[in-house]
Image 1 (cartoon, one colour):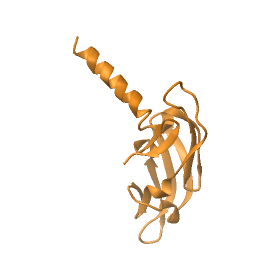
Image 2 (tube, one colour):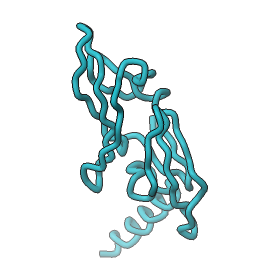
Image 3 (cartoon, helix red, strand yellow):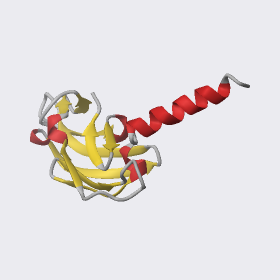
Image 4 (tube, one colour):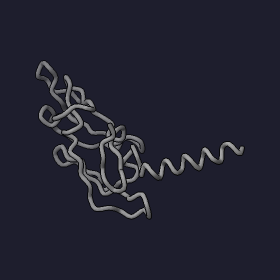
Length: 128
């Protein structure tokens, strides 16, 4: 039992230091999409205050590969249409779109933004 207390204490410090790393939607509100820009008002790590609206350009981090939205790529907005957000579950904030395949047809695509977008002290950030 004595070993668990330090581990819990260390884990608490790590979480506080990360300031809501990953799963941005659990600590943000008014989440919206304007073109390729994700916008939200996010909670700050200390005191629980809400920061001013933050924005991140998803075009800098998400691409389209043959109709599939992929991380660590760019310019999905150039090849996808009808983009929208879907809060499917508490742990999923989905970016959905109709994206062009190599043969020119459009298919439904999605990516869970909570996988790589974090709230770092009230600011939306990309986790590499």
